[in-house]
Picture 1: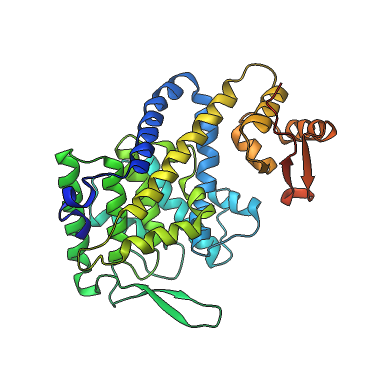
Picture 2: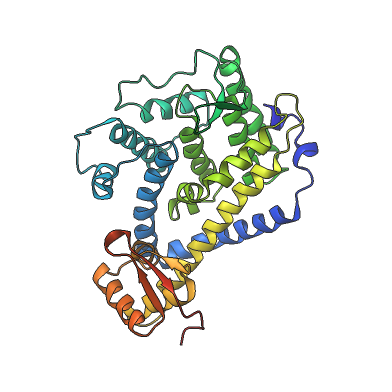
Length: 354
């Protein structure tokens, strides 16, 4: 499709910031095999948590939210078969689609795979999935006053099947040629797919599902252990801004892909940095309480939640985390903001851990 018409011209000269991020991504990828061999228990724990975060975050980006976190986790882990409303149905659909990509051999990449993922997304709803759009659509922004602004105009419905097949063919040819970094090629594929906008609904979710699958196919499996979707949800404004900037001029071949590729490589490089931090925390010698202290004082964000510590330091109980937090609070190194599950904690002492 458009982004693959002349790759040497489009992405032949990579901006320095993207070169740096690709270097970090490749370095992180090279470390994954070591962690798989030495710390399989850690990866299992991270994968379980990332799966839940990815399904809930990617759904929430589209307004699909199950307010009760415990119930959402039960749905994701298939501990309940009763789905009470549309949000729960779509959450279960995203679960099924992600599990299909992560647990089965989904290859080859073709239009049938895209249709199957879409069918899975809506299999629990009354909406029929698994078909390309039959009417032209627009991607719009809605203002609080109800007015709309066209963000971009997708490919017409009549041309969608051809456009999808053409995109897949051009992407596969580019991968086979081996002349450009596979992360950049994957990013261009996702950009073009979103501009084609092949479905009436679910385009963003299908694109995010495919992002993980395509990166995994190239050996970049960090999305199994650190949720890329969570990172996107936490930077949603930047996500939409980057996409918007890279769609200007797409139809006439003058689009600039670098805002989008810069954003995407930043998300992936950030995930590898988080992965390395969590692995380092797990390798820290000493008791579980010492590992928690080390993480909070050296690696955690300045403001964090108990759940963030739980994710970063697998194998410890919430009771142990709360005990360490209380100790640090008494030492004047953290303060609590709020109570209960919504509580956050803030480091008040940024001196090196001793």
